[in-house]
Amino acid sequence: MVWDWIPRNLGMLGELLGEHVVLALVPVLIGLVLAVPIGWAAAGNRALRTVLVPAASVLYTIPSLALFIVLPAIIGTRILDPLNVVVALTIYTVALLVRSVADALGAVPSLVVAAATAMGYRPGRRFVSVELPLAVPVLIAGLRVAAVSNISLVSVGALIGVGGLGQLFTEGYQRNFPLEIVTGIVLILLLALVVDGMLVLIGRVSTPWTRAGANA
Amino acid sequence: MNALFSWLADPAHWSGPAGIPARLVEHLWYSILALALGAVVALPIGALVGHSRKGGFLIVGTANGLRALPELGLLTLLVLLMGIGLLPVTLALAVLAVPPLLAGAYSGVRNVDPGAVDAARGMGMREWQVLTKVELPNALPLILGGFRSAALQVIATAAVAAYVSFGGLGRFLIDGLRTREYPQMAAGAVLVAVLALVVEGLLALLQRAVVSPGLRGGGRRSPTATVGRPAPGPGSAHPDPVPTREPAGAEP
Image (cartoon, rainbow over all chains, first blue to last red; front, side):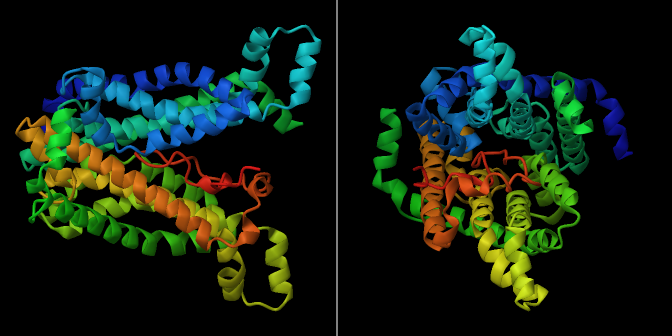
């Protein structure tokens, strides 16, 4: 029976799923940490913005398979190093989030910033406790796109031997075994759904004021 | 790096059925077929749903769900089920083109100024005329924005088709990988990336040429255009399926 394949390989599937989660989400975290200061700089300085935001768009245009393959020559890793995938997806995440952060911070009402300043907030503290929280909804929207697209893109890494669940595609193709490929697709879709839902939840919990406003 | 340039400079790599020009033509051919197929399916649905102003959540949900679909899995599955051929490759790539096209057509038509639509009805236009003469021209920036990200996605991902023994620029990547010939791989990667950038630039120019000058107001659209705007597109494409929000040269 063909369906046996799934229960017989649960251990391997779990391992690949874990690898997939790490390869897809570590770049989201690193990307977020990098994108906030860059986006902040772009939001505060018009000249910087006109350079940074289009530059980020151009980075995003580079095809993933191409980036996976060219990176080793640039950062000196081995071609099959998982680091290539992590760095490439981090680049995409930063490219995507810089624009979100810049837009979100640019949309914080200047009166709110002025009020915070008048209350004695210094720029650093004002950024962390006033501007950044107000930027959360747009930031979460950007993170959702980055996370879902990373989860889907990791599988391309299977072509260079590092692809988490994507390895089910290359292996299933070589063995002429569609069930293995379908299993991979379903697991990736489920993973994307779960991560997306978690991000929505995080967004809700961290912005209680948006609901208070909606009820009023 | 030097090996890469000498590979690219070698005239032997620029001729014959496995040369760069032939692979480039193949690559563009699959991409155009997939885009055409995707557009035939997605644009009418997106425009009609946008026109009816109902069921938008279905469009946004479908578009986002399709985005999470791993292209490599879809491609290998279709080829296993249908055999190696142009059809499975085109289908797999067309699925990739659908989300941005659908989202662009839907949000473009949906966000046309309701005043303009009312005026058109008041002038006695039929629904069909309202759609073709008022809504579609007004929606053109967002539709073309969706088309741009669809084109980029497809061109970037068409490289993966080489994995299932197909042509296109991806051949250099996959063959180079199999034979551990790094210059060939790097050359393939650079060629795909350059192609994506060139097409993006050309489409941006086309967009400026085609869109009515009356619509190039830049920020004017931003307050109303947020309703039902889809999330930006993932994958190896433009970060924003509606890049027209900041058309090139619209900065004051």
